[in-house]
Figure 1 (cartoon, rainbow, N blue to C red):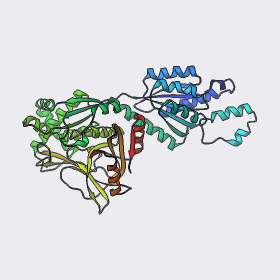
Figure 2 (figure 1 turned 90 degrees about the horizontal axis):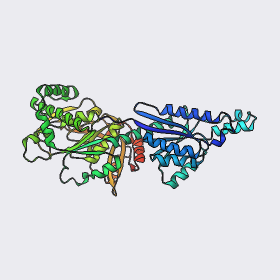
Figure 3 (figure 1 turned 120 degrees about the horizontal axis):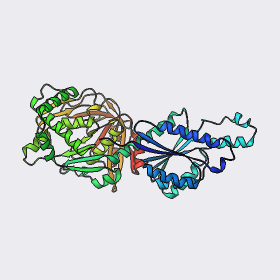
Figure 4 (figure 1 turned 135 degrees about the horizontal axis):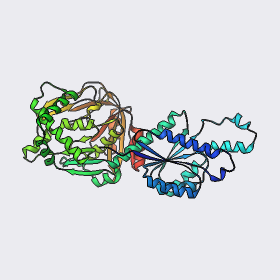
Amino acid sequence: MDYPPLRIGLFGIGLDAYWPQFAGLKERLERCVARVAQKLARPGVEVVNIGLVDNPERAHAAGREFRREDVDLIFLHATTYALSSTVLPVVQRARVPVIVLNIAPEAAIDYAAFNRLGDRTRMTGEWLAHCSACPVPEIANVFRRAGLRFHEVAGVLEDDPECWGEVDAWVDAARVAAAMGCNRLGLMGHTYGGMLDIQADATLQAVTFGTHVEHLEVDELSGLRRGVSAAAVAGRVAEFRAAFDVQPDCAERDLEESARTSVALDEMVAGHRLGSLAYFYSGTGVPENEATMASIILGCSLLTARGVPVAGEYEVKNVQAMKILDLLGVGGSFTEYYAMDYNDDVVLMGHDGPGHVAIAEGKAKVRPLGVYHGKVGRGVSVEMAVRHGPVTLLSVIEDAGKLALLCAEAESVAGPIMEIGNTNSRYRFVCGAREFVRRWNSHGPAHHCAVGVGRAADRIDKIGRLLGIGTLRVC
């Protein structure tokens, strides 16, 4: 599904009493705010720059303007000293998270040149132009007392990769948080019976992330399968052969059944405008539905690779984790850890069913399975390892009636895996395999989690902060 652009509010702060006293100061600070706006601009982001706010009346108007513009996040650029009474109304009325930019125009004052100015009024004006750090404690004090969440980035306007890398991470996090609030999650079937850890409160998901939940019937997917043409089936089989390394022992009939379901699944996802899906079906003796669900794996894998994560076993919490990783651009494959290799100090992780084939090491294989263990039917399944290199694990957990984000960073490493038609990977943790599982389990997650490629823990922490939920990093 398409998501609306992220709308970022931006304003600078100052004190109107300064403008007649120090010639050119206001214009200089306005140029700094405009430069910040340029650096915030990027595809998929709309910047609402309302310029300098320098008195309480302008602050109230600015807050109303941000509300009318429906901004998702505000960047407050502390350009010089300003009264906290000038800042508070803006954020109170806007009612969105705020990032305080404690950003100086230069890395340091040129003290010798400054002291040669001679004119004390000019010197004071120059000092005020470098005074970005001055109002931040006052602002922080008032925000805390008002119960307003805020975050600070400190640095320099130009040539400061650390500062602007952190700003970029906040923008990424805000984009994910906003998209999660627009996401439509399809739930088809029911929870795998007896898996008490994966039971999820759909209302809590909606309250925390803003996710809309659409309840679906397996019968709908079976009905859509009946209308899939032979040409569409042939085209999808060809797509399978291009996307996967289809093993020679896969029966053509199984591929055709998977193709029929894949085309129908695409139609159902488009019809309900889904951005993610969780499913499970244990079967009640209806052959058509059983055939539908036995042939769903390849289609779900293609959807996951195209930005519609699909989780088996009706894993609501985990498909949310998969969606977060997908929105971060790092993947989001369904996984669990199931064994330890103490000789190599790695944790073996994977799962049966769909995999995120876009983050596979090499081309994902399709293998035939005579039985889907613990599930209905037989057919073809995906076998892959996650791309070797840095990875991030993420789980959405329930903690005392609230949701939290549990994450860890690791390395996907080469080595032997079990060739059983499942996703399989070997992960090495800086803290060691034994300590990782001890730390991870201590937070009581469900046994599934999501895995993406690259380092994403810092951005996940920022997503949690913007959503007002905890983030726990174990490694």
